[in-house]
Length: 125
Image 1: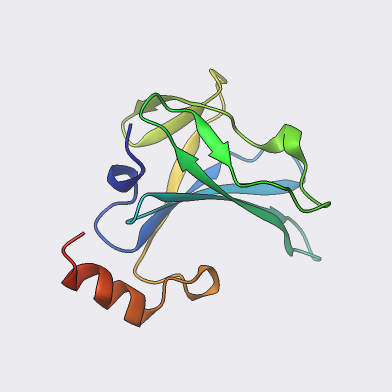
Image 2: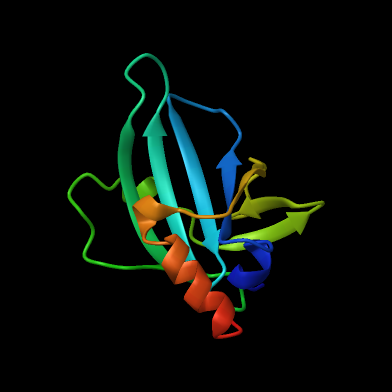
């Protein structure tokens, strides 16, 4: 499994976990192979809760950059990508679907600016 393949043809791709609780969990896969988990609140007070950078090993294992911020709920972090079926991802042998939500051309809040993407394309990566 390769994070670059899961990123699609643009800057990256965001996958969202099907609605289960008061949080919206997202996994972002970027064209340079980086991975990011982000958690948001639902409802009127919808806001960003936390985000953690990770890397994806060929066997599907996710390794998160540590030390974690105090707000990070480690139990919420997927540990291993265990399946891909028709573009839907499955983590940790759980039945919960992570469906593609958006193809990203840019993601400036996470550092994927127009300039960075231009340099990425010019370098042929």
